[in-house]
Amino acid sequence: MTPGGFTARHLAVVGLGLMGGSMALALRPHVDFVTGIDPDDETREYALTHGIVDVVTDDLREGVAEADVVVLAAPVRAIVTMIKKRIGSYLRSNTLLLDVGSTKQDICEAMGALPIGIHAIGCHPMTGKERSGITTSDPDLYKGRPFVLCPTRRTTPATRLRTLALVEALEAVPLEMDAERHDKLVAGISHLPYLLSAALVATVTKQANEDEALWQVAAGGFRDMSRLAGSDVRMMSDILSTNTQAVATLLALFRVQLANLEALLISQDEEHLIDFLTPTREARLKWIENYERDGK
Amino acid sequence: MTPGGFTARHLAVVGLGLMGGSMALALRPHVDFVTGIDPDDETREYALTHGIVDVVTDDLREGVAEADVVVLAAPVRAIVTMIKKRIGSYLRSNTLLLDVGSTKQDICEAMGALPIGIHAIGCHPMTGKERSGITTSDPDLYKGRPFVLCPTRRTTPATRLRTLALVEALEAVPLEMDAERHDKLVAGISHLPYLLSAALVATVTKQANEDEALWQVAAGGFRDMSRLAGSDVRMMSDILSTNTQAVATLLALFRVQLANLEALLISQDEEHLIDFLTPTREARLKWIENYERDGK
Image 1 (cartoon, rainbow over the protein chains, first blue to last red):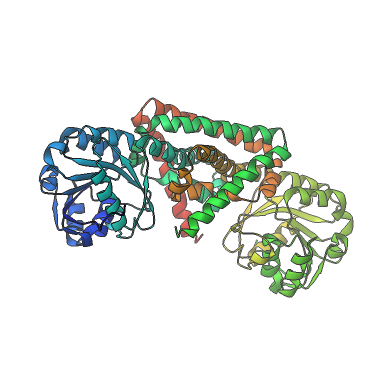
Image 2: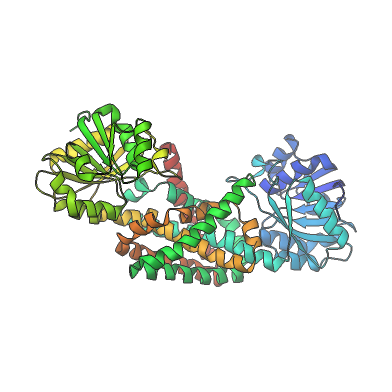
């Protein structure tokens, strides 16, 4: 079943950061009217004067009351709080409610308790930029990137189809899975890498306290491995706090792999070290070839 | 004391890969004649027909016999073997012998046992490319990059000055330190990052065996953190085998940092988690700002 073209009368975007601003820009051609909701005065001013939205407000109730599509583009726990505390009672019946939070179990569970008549679905676009904020908004942010959809107890077949149409409007690649599966996957490809990057930088910072020349000799390998450690700390802490179990499981698996590597290294067992590293190298080369072929 | 301009009559480059080929290209304007020594027929042919060197041979003795500057640009243990087994007896007195191996203690120790009259110094240019081999040779490879010099028992003040002049000819940035200190630093900024990258890819490969969608959702964070895992396995195994002690020490430090992070995560101690992550983030941002300002 192919979804029809996405249209909406009134889109409300809650949270005008990189994700929300880009969503507003990308969907503007498909909707009559866009309201932006954000607590920050400068952000609202920017969104309005740069034509990212038609109207701005810092009042959630007022902002979403007339919308038929609402996108929650805030940090994960802020989204959960909005869903639990207020938003269900502000929305019109038959509104499509989706979010773009980085973990999905807490959000989808909260969505499942919304009033019947709200069509809610958890989403996670696998995209981003080095910098964030409304000024980095980009209508092409979602283009060609995976867009994960996680059903909730408030996801009807029509909810799903309308969301697929929205994903198509963004030119993103839909990927449907349940929230638990999503959170396990991102624990491996996103949250574990962040923790490794942060722990690496913490380690070499201690080393640099004894020998400052470290910062001078650090080069491309360190640049890549330390990039995630430069992520927004509160954002990452928010994400990690909502995926602790899956992250702890991955950390345990990682420790085993690192211990295996270390044992081979210390015992100078070169044959088995190469046996370990070769399929790992091949997995990486295969992945990056596909990733780059898809134009990322 | 400023070193004079570097000149040589006859440069011999042993090992025509990225490092050796680039060294030959960068030094050609400063020397009368360049011999390239490599066991691979195609590599020698390429170096000759592309004007990277003047003469090629697969015979080490013949290739270095008439040189007054010899650069060993082979894997670390191959360099050590050449120094221990043969090269001292092949060289003329007063030859400058340097290497570009990735670890320095084993090499510098071997150099220290060369005949008196050989002027030997350990070197490690902190540069590289994604791809390697003679076809990737680039006269600008060393430009603006740190070039570590490690003295040996065969490094006279004149050896040092002549090498500094060579580094200046490459437009690289000299950094003088002893071999032990060098090996500790690269354990932190290069070898530990490699092991983390390999262990991460091994971990998510296991995870992907249970859920193949992992490869689809992996994005920019995973791309950066997995890049080093794609390095040449035999080259990395060679490097690691000559720096086991320093790498093991860094791995122990890393495990402590990762365990600290995990404890904060599991206990949901967000305040201390942020206290841990904030200086780490700042250290990374400060470093990358300097690194990029230096045009890297």
